[in-house]
Image (cartoon, rainbow, N blue to C red; front, side, top):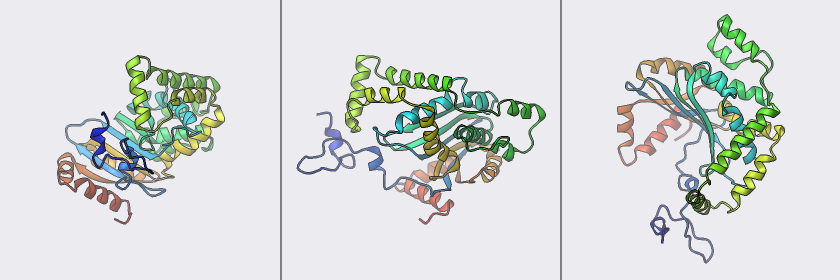
Length: 308
């Protein structure tokens, strides 16, 4: 019986009616009581500084989709692929300018969250603001000639300003949208390109209570995505990552020698990041006790002004 290990608390799901619970509890249900959430308009989390690290790493998380049959799921997948695709907006303006080597966005159905990630970033706050500019323009919510990144960083040099002017017209293009759809379709199919992979996918569907025809349904939905649906998904799910409209949670790592600089830049963001700062040794000591993670979460809530 492959489910026997999960029939022991806390993994056991709740029984309904006369049928005993035989599937493991969903991740979002297991950690629902302990989940760290930020109030609308607020950003909270942790910043860990390390003398052994030379780059910056960020994870910014907001409320996403948890329903596998959500009518917005396909549009959201295409919207994230549109932003992160090779030679796409993020590629040109974040990696192309050397602000960060890696970037990504993903929606986790198991936890119901959407994440924006930066890796090996030389200037993470600038990369974050550039990504925010891009999303605002794709949503059609940024007036022409304005820039969050420029406002935060001050006057740019003439070369950078000229580059900004040349790339000012950023909007959803049909050809790029079709490319994003193809990228999503390829990724979905590649996950079941072998018999073992297909069996693994079927097991994952069962454990997470997804319909067994989820893949077929999603493939059709992705092909039916329109520019209007992508823009709506950007406004509802992606933009709140950067505006903290639904509250955002941040996990960040930075070099120890740049910690003070990063903390100052956090305060200039809109909304400002209110993070608990820890050295690596301090983090290890904080989470070592049995109640360590609980205590750390309470510290984070306190730093953002939320009652404990």
